Image (cartoon, rainbow, N blue to C red; front, side, top):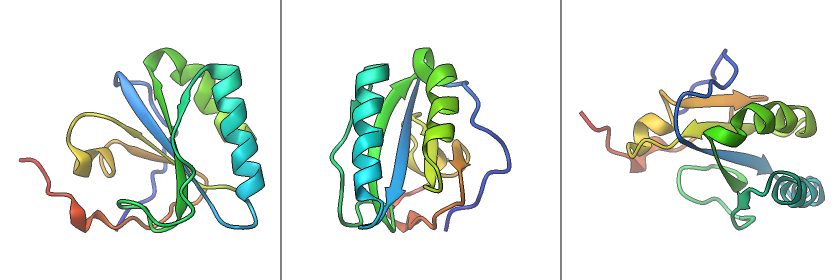
Length: 121
């Protein structure tokens, strides 16, 4: 189970994912948000999954970005997301910690299925 982060994302790692959660009704907004993320920031946007994938218990799309784009992309994304929930997490090579210790939420937290990850000691 995921836990909500009371803090705003911090730029302290080299690479990040933003997972934007949506449903059938918000799909057009997400498509537009992804297109703008690619056009305005030059970011790599993954496939828009209209099914649950990995630890994500809702439909989602992943945006990959780095420390260089963090300080401009995160405030922009927070403003543009409206009522959509977004998981922002660092990429450290430890998937469990990335989705827990290195995770931040823009909007309400979405439950994650972390059972597929083995914590690295």
